[in-house]
Image 1 (cartoon, rainbow, N blue to C red):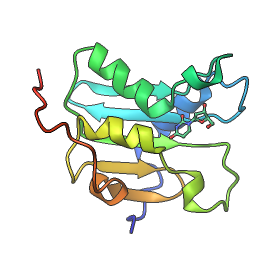
Image 2: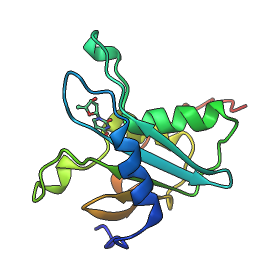
Image 3: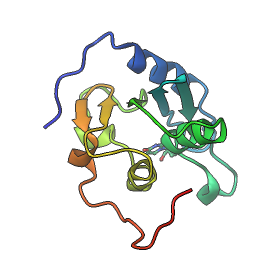
Length: 139
Ligand code: THU
């Protein structure tokens, strides 16, 4: 079960700002993500494309931006889905499975995932069995 969010958590505010940059001409569904770490905060938004399937989610945009900037150690992530109507079930606010697998590459079981309007989860609660390549050689 998620823990209640601190309403004014600054990382949630960052995720809401990130959502304002979403490029969503097709779905009109904005998503924002904010990753914090020793580097500060890196934001991501969803970026869609006329070739629908090649669009990218906000969470992966944030992770890719951080890794490209040289950062692989993260403290927390916050996610905001402002176009899910208030009162929607929690499923309307959760990160997709692809983004959970993508996060699993860089975070551990206790990593805090803050979902705007839902609460705070430990990563393991929302993705208990990630795929891990048996002979992975990280570099
Ligand atoms: N989307 C995200 O950015 N993150 C998620 O976790 C779920 C879905 C985006 C993808 C697409 O641009 C829009 O939301 C509608 O699916």
